[in-house]
Image (tube, rainbow, N blue to C red):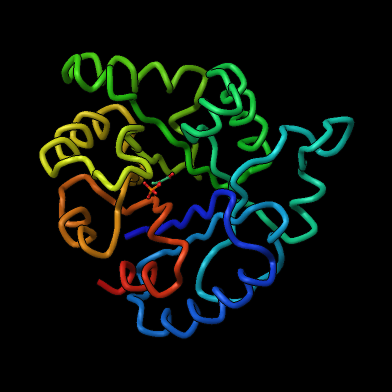
Length: 230
Ligand code: PEP
């Protein structure tokens, strides 16, 4: 299973060091085949030792240059970061990242051989239209994306379940993952959306779920490690 933490705009460098210390203590009991990622805010990126991989939540598709407020490959290389989250709904929605921009980013980091966790997900009004509308919406988020890329993990995150405390139902996750698996070349497929210690077992036992991308419940090292060790 894959367990990925997305800190979003939470934690500082200092609190991340405390977090990593606690996580490492807990990870001593983790199954060797399970993989753990933590996606940190840019100011907390650093070289951390442990049985997990550090990723960036975002970066500009350039080595360096005149992109005020952004970080590029050069800044990531300083800490040997080779993992990136692309297409998260918060970046699509709040930062106005179009599918074209997302695809450009994907292609740049693919050329750099990064491991990419690529997020897709539908808003509530699409889910309410029914399954066909959901799949049509999700498949459009693969436009310009090389699904055959070797170092690709996909995260299905229904937007209405992110940070709301309301996870998708087992039936919704199961049906959507089954349909997605047919088109994603058997790449690992994570579920994201209010995953937490109370529902993790149920979620990871669903066929077609290869792990979880966790926001709120990952901010506390003991809650996140409880999920990993469940
Ligand atoms: C996310 O934003 O990737 C996410 C899954 O958030 P949460 O777990 O808080 O719903």
